[in-house]
Image (cartoon, rainbow, N blue to C red; front, top):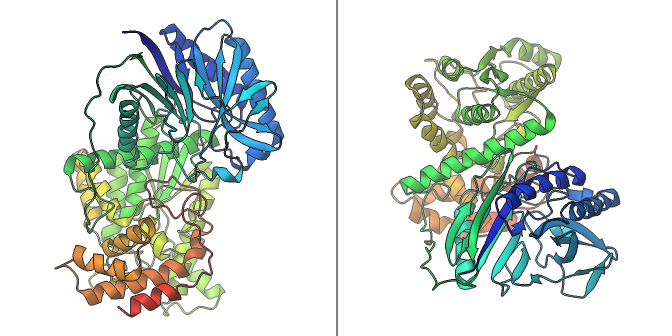
Length: 588
């Protein structure tokens, strides 16, 4: 049966640098041709990058993309391979997300995207192609079938072709890659065709999203080749695709999720392990990209001995290892205050020693006492001012140390804290890059335990100390025995319940009575209906009232389908009323 050697390529890009991207594309194309590739696909918007934002409105960038395209065509005029590459094209005042199709130095045509991505907010810049006949510099726009090869951008349009080249810029979220693979298998099965997908990857902005460079080639329901994801240097896949295919293969099916008390945490052990590895990879890839972009090689984080900062440390370690940088480049700062216990202080030290990172201790109490005198606050009054003075002092130290050390300050606050506003405005709420903002509290402990399983004894023991420590900001003095007195869940209610409400409120838009009914079922035997109602009211009241903190969050990678980022996630006015939801919850 006839075969067509097909390659899906995702070379590293330089964001908003079309000339450099064209050079990288040419190198990757030559490598693919040397391997025998006759059809080649590169990612959506590759020449510009898919995360340029309002730069798409700049004529300078658009002209540079056009110049890069014509240069690439000239450089490939000796190649017979069909090449599809993405770029933005402006026609009559409208901007289109296009795929240019090249062969033997000629630009055969442009395929334009019909369904824009809501996730990346494409409609802010791009116009969805409606099928009208257009031309750009004499090149036809809209054709998506070239001989027996079809061109697709974004969502599948079910072209009738023997081979489909799919240009993608889909970000990574936990569980998405599995669905992507199954979707590609299903499409190639249903259309009885070959299917090559090239996804955006290394070099794209990690402001809110992370791109893995997933390249997959399938035929007749089977994966033929796929690239390694999250490579910092680019990725590629190449395979022989049969153009006349045998009878369809059997495809796997996705199981419907059952209602569970932990919707963010997979129940099946192997799936859980895969999910946790993927989360850590997404976080590390996002942080690595930010470090490469800024040129920084040092990382600073406040290490409290609690779960969130420990997870940030683990990701920082994974990142510097990925970049082949010394772990001593990670500067952890422990900052004992009025509520710090001996136990968490020792835990921070044990973590730093076990993982061979730099640790510095700065006692914040003298500075806080001076500040309380400056603003005439009685240090015996342990109110919100007393607490927030400590939180802001810690952030001031970390920010200034980051400047002094030319380092990137990592934020550690998690998704659950952002949902409930359990953070101090312009203190732990702020950082230079927040790693954990896409992770709920119920996942944090699981991720730490997951890493502990593969660690040497000393590190595993230190991590187990963390997972057994009550959740606390440690801003109020310890009890008489020196133990943590301020336990967050005593004030807010269990994080597992709040995470449950967050998931179904965000993902399913359930009404308060639906949330409560489901919680009663999911937490049967653990909490009473009255308790669950009380915590639902807490969740709703705080979720609405604390939006102002989420409106100005620092950058950080989106991890799953629930995101509270003001850019790519949750959009809500800071002064929205919660009355409609609270009244229904109170009347349960």
